[in-house]
Image (cartoon, rainbow, N blue to C red; front, side):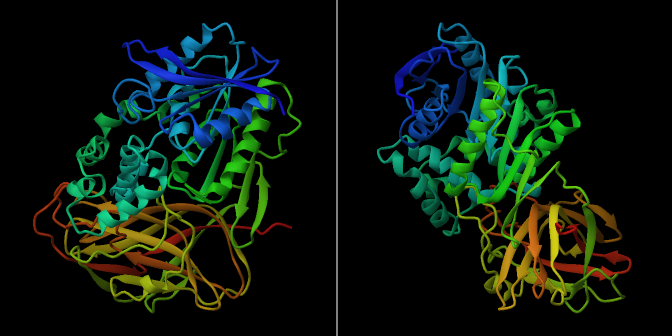
Length: 528
């Protein structure tokens, strides 16, 4: 292990006069070693300094760890996502002028730290040799407005976290923010006031997200770097989790790079966003990646570019690409007797339930930013009258599903504004019903194809890599709420800050030959 010197609080001046602070980690005897650039809103010391700063320096890389604008000594005002392109490029230009810069660098980091990488990647220049991104994506817009709804709990918990980080007990913000957020959403206050309940004052970014929900494009134009992912020349490795809030859009980044002729690496494990178990694999894979693309040593790279953990089978697999070879989309139809199967539906009356926004359908688990999103038993939710539950017979053999998941439902609602929530579960022989993936689609008058007064609604669920074992059953939920993952739908089309009357919605789900509601699952042949 190399001895490491640390240069603290290095000022880096931005073109608009704001000064950002950075720490530089230098391995002994390697003054001009390749640089790993890390830009973070969460500080430069503590775990970040030890794990990332010293961790890479111990392995022979310089590390430049910079605090983003508006936090931890860096000047300017915190404007999440808004300055990362310009500030990142200005930092790279400054770095190139330093005598210790040897001509090559990489970028690294999870979540927001990954977004700062994508923000500069297309314009960083040829000396950006490699990127290692984890649990992140090139744009956060679609995760903020998931399925056209609003990711209430994730948005409120993150804005509360960033507010608490600057306070006296900022080091504990990661623990306290989820708790105060959960207490806030259970108060029943309007969505527009929940930041007051969680943080005690208006939170600018939270209110920006609310204000731009109806028309997100103008606000997000400079915060969306997905259109240029295919232009990135650097070698990219991605690590994600099946239960991470950003997984669907991380996989879109992967597909964009493949469409542009690039060969990124991809790892997906059984992790949620805040699961500490992905820290070890993140560092190990990043070190192997940087050694290959900055030092010319590819000996630690795996043979296949895609590595997936298959839940249910509890084993890792390697593949040449995503989606995996041999994938076949299989329709599992909702049935009149609350069954679920691959046979076509028969003539039948629709199933019905009533959604009450005053008593919104809750959620148990599922992808949330600052919560343990791993599978949980859904039986308490399934007992509710506002959740339809469709179950297959016990499986006669193992079924492996690896790939994207979607639902095509035919629904009619008594209000033009409603949410459609779909969830897939694995029912164990002992009765436990464990959620595997889910998705939501928010409906408005023009949000879906209409056949008479029946809407054909397509819902994108989270991708999966899961084995449904012999003797288990596949189960599908259909509901109109998932509170507080998304806010209650008042049914009247008012903006998210709605404080007026709310309208219950009577929802019908059709499953006839003319309206064949189904979940489309990615069937794969088992290995061997």
